Image (cartoon, rainbow, N blue to C red; front, side, top):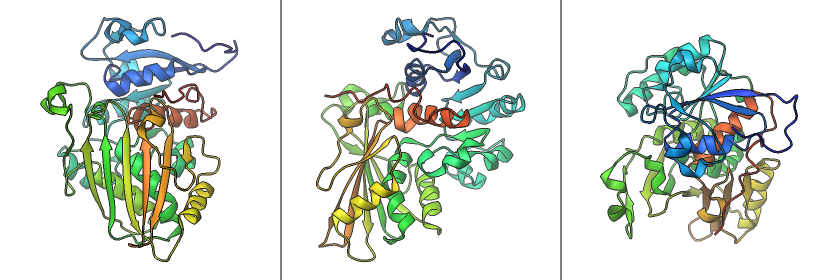
Length: 359
């Protein structure tokens, strides 16, 4: 992998292994890690493209990486300093024990280590969890809320894309205790890349183009318990939400709208100040001025979460708009942010160079 210009000869080199390197989140990891001054991608694990140059599979990587796909066995991955797993649920739990036993660290972009409750995982994912002890140890990898726990972790469950957007929209309000914990609604829209690279009738061009649909409604989407887990942490009490995801005909991006009932009257300006104070010093959360609402295109390709809000005095609610790139802050970028914390690096390393692409 090419070194970033200006990298010093004595700089730390972190050997990275990726299991699931040729899915959309995996290849986004490779794109972003190519910008990182302290990283060497040593293993690009894939089932579909073993023995093939990744730049041949993804030509946009040409001239940036010289990686060949290989089998990501536990033994191969355990030779790396840190392992990213970007696999369907149920697979990382089989790899994690060997990687951790070798003294390595693991960041799971899948769902196996996001929830703390084993029975809840098995209920929502219809899969028996074979590493419940590790599930109890894992730290939820949302740096803005769990930074100090992440620093000392061996195992990080990287948040889902929808839960990231929703949690960052809700955190200042719930932490301040100024909204009701009952009746919270999230209405979220995602680009098609969130469905992954596999063949799926629902994301064919003719099915998605000039179309807009809701799916997995009425508390059936698997990200629902993850959202509720984080919001319950913030509120200090159990929180149940109504979450409705939608598929929109764009490649990248999530726009989540949160609806919260205020306990007492507040102005938009007061709440913008609250959000700015809460996220002061956060490198990847940008709070918009009152009256300015964010768009997905403004964070495209970056690790930013942009937030805007407005109070509706007629209903006593505040509406919070949160936008992220589902493949970056919602997946690979956040995983790298977590890696930086694990290794004591600047949290922004390798990520600030990935500025939003606009228009």
